[in-house]
Length: 221
Image (cartoon, rainbow, N blue to C red):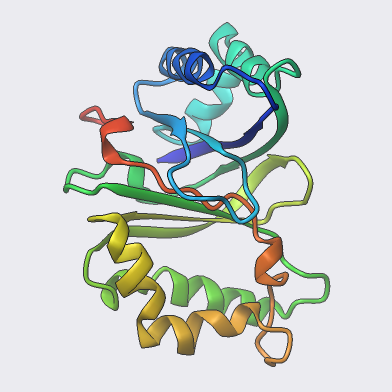
């Protein structure tokens, strides 16, 4: 699956309820596989609204971009009357999480940019470790660390990290406290470490958690 993600900061005074309803309709017009709603947890420092649309592959994404439905979705995500800022990434390929069949109630996406001069071998190592998180965190249903092929916003986003958890407390508890996270993940974000490849953690964008009830899943996607 190939995914497109919008992390939106709504403008002060925007009608969030109406925006969410409009966004759901616009996303569904683009693809039957989508996820759109307000973020459940405070972002760090991402937006307060999240929209993700899934495609069978990158070719399907490129085809959709030529359609009126995509133009309408892009216009809504960047509507200056309702939106203060919009960060966008498109990424894949791989077995990503919007089509998962097991029960999960927490969905999370991070946007990453890689620091200038980062060692490519360390980037490859980070990708391998982050894609191995499911083996070390009970309740982490799926995870995928994938390169970004298209982006816009405040940074040159390079990677997306997408996860599904059985419940929010798995993310806040087991995931964040597992020794694997401390020993094999945190070092990629620590300037004092020789394996530092990322920007400092306060510059990572797009932290989002959403309940599965907002996830529209269809067979075959």
